[in-house]
Length: 341
Image: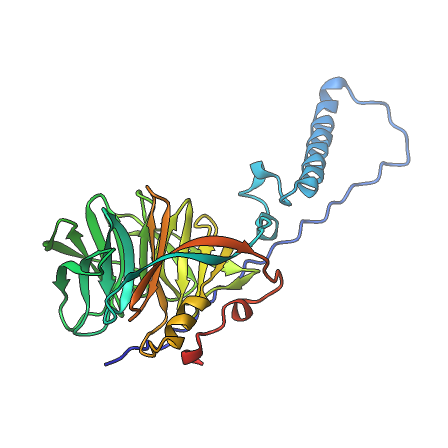
């Protein structure tokens, strides 16, 4: 029974090339002096000169702007000028509490369901499910077992509806949060189904590449796509997602890292390092565990939970800022977990 997914080829998109400005040429005045033309004939040169002066002022203001462009010309500025400076923050964690978790749950989607419960989507063929789980005991309260030919993936909750995608298919399901037997199916145009999250208005989706999608929750049509980047390098293998305080947080498959992503432009604004959690489990004899995967946010009580595939624990953590290498690549910051090397 497979536990490791084959690496999808990272998505690459050619960057736009900024066009150089056209050369300006100014004709020299004629040597022979001529009487000034009537006033009504002088207006066109005056208007042209004023227009040229206006353009020069805009160029000077654009060069002086802290973001390198004039915001009112954003649609017309070269792509190279549209990049905004990003200050990346780095975090470790303090462990607040740990809770029991089904060690046979191949966690693919996790979200807080209120009243100390989680909704969880599990994967693997013939073992995939959608379930509601008690936080304190880890007990499965309600469960829908999926067709054995389907591999469950990301899960999110919007307006009492649970949205789930499946692996290796452009297919998904919508469940009534109170009755999993009430469900309908949908198709999507992401390359694959990996992660899902929502801000209460749109769905965010990942497909295992560096792309982050925004989907219309009614039509499931793609509204917007951004490429997730850190220091101009794409961040592939985006997996389980969670929307927290205006950012999309993404597990990066095969690593112990969570990327905090701006969904507006795809820039990584923060990294969370959680390698100590997996290492502690491994050192405690839990050698069957798989990679970190699963982020849940209790917005009302400001509680953050994380877990992994086949992990026997769910952890409540608090982030702690740390110093990080400003010049570190994704591979250096978030190397593959040891059992994938």
